[in-house]
Image (cartoon, rainbow, N blue to C red; front, side):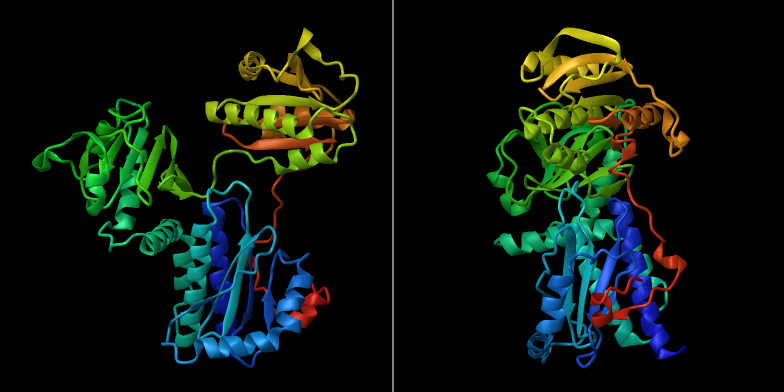
Length: 480
C-alpha cells in the first residue's frame, strides 16, 4: 500500500471512530483535526463539517503567526522522551468546542476538536476520548502496518473506558494513597444493576464506592457481617438491597468488592457514586456529575433540556416584558418537570401585548406564575391535552388550547400532531414561541414555523474520504 495513502487512511479511520463513538455518547458530534505529522511539515487541517469556521483569527494567531516559536517549543519538549509517549498540549479554548492536543516523537503535533454540547454532565470523558485518539494515531503512524479498522473500532466503543480513565486520573491526583478500587468492573456492575428490576421496578437509591482506607471515616447506620457481605458483581442481590435506601438520604456503601453497610453521612470526596433514579441514573465522582446512564450505556447528557435557543429568542426580543430571564427560568422548570414525569406537553409563549385568542380554557383572571401555588398548578395543567398559554408578563392565560393553522410544506408527519400543529400555528402568528415536549424527552423550540433547535445533518465521514488541506488554504476559505 502507498505510504501516503496509508497515513491518510489512518487519520480518516480514527476521525470516523471518534465521531461515531461520541455521537452515541453525546448528541450527534462533529470532529476536526489540526496536525503536523513531522517537525518540518506545514500545519494541515481536516475539518469535514467546518466546525472551525468562525475561529480563523485564533487559528491564524496560533498556527501561522506564531508557529515557528511553537514548533521550537514542541521540539524541545519531546526531545529525549520515550517512544510512544504523548505529551499534552495546551487546550485551544475555542468557544463551543472541546479540544485535546498532544505531541510526540512519532507524530509531531495534533489537536483534536469536537462539539461542546450544552447538556453535558462533564467534558472530561470527551477529553479522554480525544486523548485516546491522539495516542492511537501516533501508534498507527509509527507501526506503518496497523489493521485499518482496529483503532476506529476501539474509539466507537470507548465510553466506559473514557469515564474510567478520567476517574483514575482525578483520584490519582487528589488521593494521598494508591487506590485499590478497580474502576472498569465497578462501572460495568453499575450498568448491570441499572438494567435489573426488582418486582418489576427499576433501581432507585444511592450506592457509593470508597476505598478501604476510608471506610472508617464513613458514619454507618449499620454494617453487614464480613462473612455475609454480598459481592458487587452479584447484581440481583445488590438490586434487592437498594430497596433499603430508596427515597431517602441513606446510601449503600461499598469498598469496591462488597457491600459494607448502610450510611446516612455525606459522600466522601472522590468516592464513586451511582445515583439510581428508575429508568436512568447519574454517575458522580463525589458530588460532581460525570455521566448519566440509561438503556444499558453511559451518556454525557444531563437529561435536562438546556434550551439555549429559547433563551436567545427571549433576550433578543424587542417586545416589552417584565423579565426575559425570569420567563426563561419558569418555562425551563416546567419543561424539566414534564421531562422527568415522562409526559408530552405544549407551551405557547405569547410575546404579544394583547394575547392571541386560542380555543381552549381561558382563565379569568389569569394567574401569576410567580406564585408558588400557581406554578404547581401550571405543572398539573401541562398534563391535560392541549397547550398551556403563557404571556410575557409571567401569567397563565389559558390551558387545554388547540393550535390550528393552514398546512405548510415543511411539515414532518413522523413527528405527530402536537409538533405539526405547533409548526402551523407559529407560522401563522407573530411573536409566538412554542415549546413542544415529547413523552420520550426531546424538546422542540418552534418560532415562525421553524424548529430552531433541530439538529443539522451532515455527510457521515465514512461515505467519502475527506482531504486535509494546508492551513493557508483553509484560512483563505477553502470548504471541504
